[in-house]
Length: 108
Length: 117
Image (cartoon, rainbow over all chains, first blue to last red; front, side):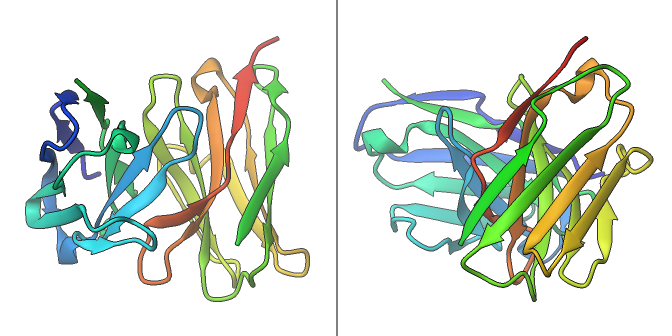
């Protein structure tokens, strides 16, 4: 099973700042089969990025994904207040599909 | 696309959880349909998938207790999880796996499960 680790656990950021979230895998993730989700309280997760760097439908271009192998990054170029949430990474290149523990992004 | 889930919210220990997810405004064909859960500690766990043709894949940690099925005539897919313990208490989600990979692009709002006598 591929174990995903996310850092930091919590990030306090001012509006307009750049945010960088990290997702590290215990094994190589083939073909960039890595997704990112945003979850707000009381809601289901929402797909943000798939295939490592492809934005999902309706996701603003301030969100971008990058990385390969075992190291992946989600970047928010300029944080908006509505972006505050828990962000999870998920790998789907190997079964079982697994999720990271999440990074909470909050407004400073 | 709309996903609507229903089933028991309270099940006794050693009991069986049955959930059904109805898919509206699109065909089930060509996609995989998934069940996931989120623990009280906010951890997300993939449980298993079923294809529109009925092929299944399960998380090995649950394989002996889990059955996922699909009824394309009713546009529904279902989960059955047996021998419940307190560790199975979570919010259960049904979701669609993406066309090009097993990421999850549509989710229902989730159903919380309590395991208690």
